[in-house]
Length: 158
Image 1 (cartoon, rainbow, N blue to C red):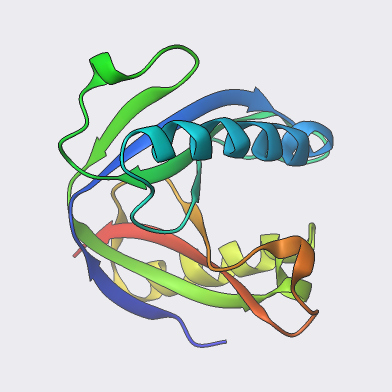
Image 2 (image 1 turned 45 degrees about the vertical axis):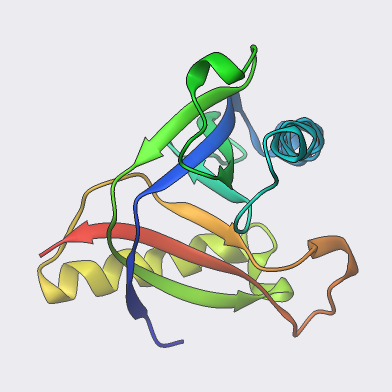
């Protein structure tokens, strides 16, 4: 796997955030994605792929803070939203990422992908500046085992 980099634009997201473990992660993402899709449609539609932001580790032993995020037009205001949806505005940045297959996306294999991206950052002397994320490229359930489904990305500074 070869880590790549890209520059991102400032992004406005509608999000839902919850403290979950691996057992509850899929259910949270599925339910919140349905709600976020509905809200995004009312606000003019999503303008990019759904992104899951991990503010803490999620494993079999540890629950973590997870934010499911749907990118929308930047003219959305927090007053357009009702709980549990919130607004998140992230600045543009550089990010290191690996594009992975459905097989690599499965837990616990995906943990090695994160290790690879963080190892690359350390090797190059870069510092993560925002939480790591999974940027979904396609619907996981309908993808084949070798289809690219996700970018595991970590925003960084030089």
